[in-house]
Image 1 (cartoon, rainbow, N blue to C red):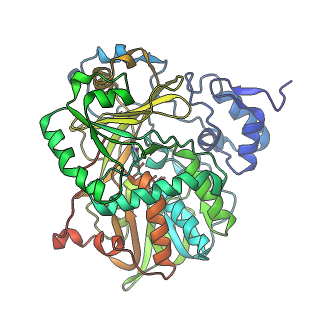
Image 2: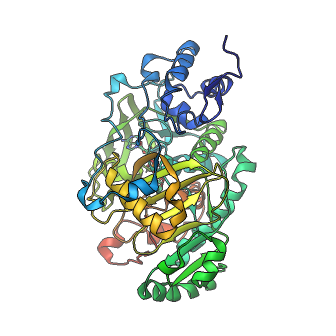
Image 3: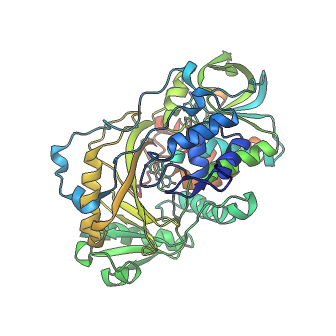
Length: 495
Ligand SMILES: Cc1cc2nc3c(=O)[nH]c(=O)nc-3n(C[C@H](O)[C@H](O)[C@H](O)COP(=O)(O)OP(=O)(O)OC[C@H]3O[C@@H](n4cnc5c(N)ncnc54)[C@H](O)[C@@H]3O)c2cc1C
């Protein structure tokens, strides 16, 4: 007879009681329960536990749509990086051919039981970290008539697919200020919101493989110093004191800030959502925004596949889909969604302190608090597009790059790979403030660093929306800067 302590997912130690707790907290579908408990993310990738958890959810009252299987992530079985490094990336096709199936039609999706409200003061499109952090910060300031609309489960977008890097090493004082504030908020998050975000303050180490990158780091250092960062330029020997596994012949210098950190992204969304809801805001998952109603210079209602909601203000926090959402009311954003891939290996005892990134080729990797190596690498040939499939080409490129950088990683076995989209703007800075309509606020364009910007930006935006003074970011990062040519490009992009 199964008991509360019966293990349903042996890879990740998830018991029947934990699945029940997730269900009781409102996470009824398999994708949400996976992200709430961690079941199905280990070496077997759900092969042993998916059916057991589905059975348990059905027993608890879940509908057949809610127990539709989640996407099993490749590779099917753990594969060593050294084996993948033997593949020739040039012979492998570009683009995400495997991994994420086409979206299910609305009638086959889980549907929330509560009806949508007829109106809300603020409707936020997108339940990623941006939308949820904003709802939570608004509610904290007494603006509680807020409705967040998310077309899938929480963590479906880039916020559930990223590397969890939180660093203050940027090239502009504005981004350094925002990142420093976010780091401070991340540090307090677990205590204030009661959710463990597995924060690991191991620093960031940027490796400069050639003279061009060394010169660039030398020029950037004074900005860091002037803005109160502890960044230092270090020699290969000094870098190897921090990470002995690095091949010191592969780089000439490195930039090292011990205060940067890595977090586990998923709990942030649950924490922000729970606090927003506890204070009176509403979060409707599996609800897709399909259009807007307008009158003159204002949007008057948001139209969804579950009905319409009249509103005073709309916030576009749809991440890589923000351009698509803006287009629903005829507003053109210059954002370009671009696919990025990432992977994790089996867990190991701690061996890697910082997040390591190689300037020039986009490789980055860190070790999570759970012991997994988490790493990604952009592909310069990746075309613009909203595609979430994964590729063997990425595994081969990543494996070659990491085993060259840190040869001892060769034996590590990859258990899971997936893709997400960066929401890229022409100057790598976000788009904030009204666009097209006076009450259509943008909170998008965060490229590959939105997770770490969200706590600080949401705090500033909520303060401004609640009647406080606007921060410079809401006058500088408006969409009209592209027409005005008032750009301050951010170059410190990785991935
Ligand atoms: C592989 C990868 C690695 C990354 N690494 C890092 C990192 O280390 N550090 C860091 O700070 N950032 C990183 N990022 C970037 C970061 O994840 C994003 O900038 C951030 O998560 C954006 O948050 P968001 O809330 O704006 O978007 P999202 O999390 O994408 O949320 C937008 C939501 O809108 C929903 N949506 C879309 N259309 C509609 C609609 N019509 N109706 C209703 N809902 C809709 C989507 O389903 C989605 O859930 C990485 C990104 C990727 C892809």
